[in-house]
Image (cartoon, rainbow, N blue to C red; front, side, top):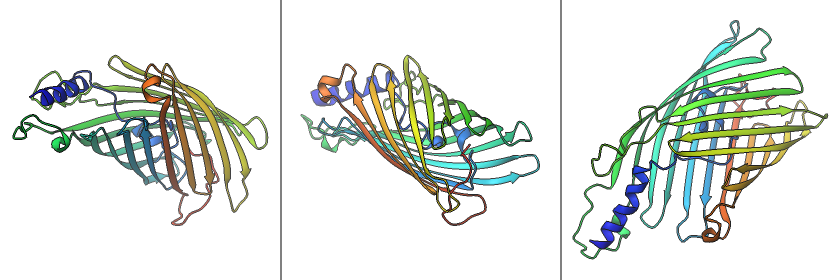
Length: 324
């Protein structure tokens, strides 16, 4: 019973404190992960991405997170400059010898509309519905009595989310985008033991990114992300520098490097390369929190790739316009 009691005591705080949702340090390389309003909210016909995160590799079994996303334009009205887009995403994370983690699948629908006739001011509204299963594998647990069974190893629950996103480009040298979203609107019960007070709290996110092109081939890109979930909070702020290597008719090539700070937790370094319709991203967290000693200051690394289709094309082609 001692092993079983210990495991339950470890699992109960995760549910009672509601923990944090799956999240990535690559703040906006794949915007659908941030906000359902970003589903297809860019100047193209489709966008597909994959991302992998490995956290605290110094421990025996690190936290591992994987996500796969896809977005497509469903309908566009060129006269009113509005349209609908749809997106889908799949998440999986697990950690520890019992592989405790969550798998979820989501569908998103977004409507965007131009706020003027100059195609430089847009607003998007998005909704998202999904289903998740969290659980663990007790087969690797060491039990004093091997005949003991866990009553429940999984918890299944629906998820609802909504978001708002705004894009503004007053001139050719500056553009900004701001997003506000709320996830777990329905606050589902995630208890393994049938308790009534173990539910997933709503998570609120506020995101802002700007790009200022201060020279012919260089731009400055400040960023900020604030997330609140119950008594937990996450504040990330930083800046990227982007270098446009080629903007010709045949190729679009750029490099981006930046540094951000997750308040009280980590320094985040990222490197991103765009080559025509492909975007490759690498990100590393250096842990500076109170867990730095236990983790040997090793935080997390992420790698990701995004593939984008331009309007009306079924093959890879460079995007000529800044994504929304």
